[in-house]
Amino acid sequence: MRIAVLNGPNLNLLGVREPEIYGRETLADIERAVRSRAEQSKVEIEWRQTNDEGEFVELVQGLRGRADGALVNAAAFTHTSLAIRDAFLAVRVPFVEVHLSNIFAREPERRRSLLADLAVGIVAGFGPLSYLLALDALLDHLNRRGS
Ligand code: DQA
Image (cartoon, rainbow, N blue to C red; front, side, top):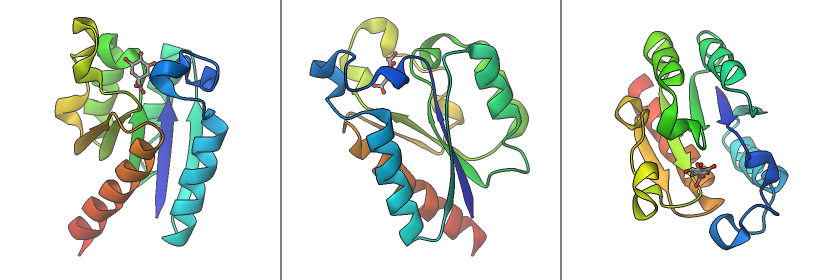
């Protein structure tokens, strides 16, 4: 099984960026933890990060046929991007929306997600652990669907 992990803008700055909200772990730390968890389940991970909305759209478009499912932290694009929403509507690849912070407990403009109703589910608020919980949940969903 192959899972893509798509990370949006400014997540490359994790570790130094607003550590009181996002913690001190870097995106590379989170990638290592996700890869190690995935290895235990014999799952292949494709890990991507981009600050560019158009590139994010292309990554979503490319999911079809390349990944069985995805973990998606679209960062600020979550709240703003109809283009990314449309790309998910087009490809219909199952994904779990992931956030380090609890977006529903933050500023009003972060409480709306343009992706949430398309997702299998959302994991938010657990810091880096959100990614691992989301991976477990996605694998459980795909395995149950396949059996
Ligand atoms: C985030 C939450 C978003 O509102 C924010 O723009 C981010 C990170 C999170 O993981 O908590 O960049 O997606």
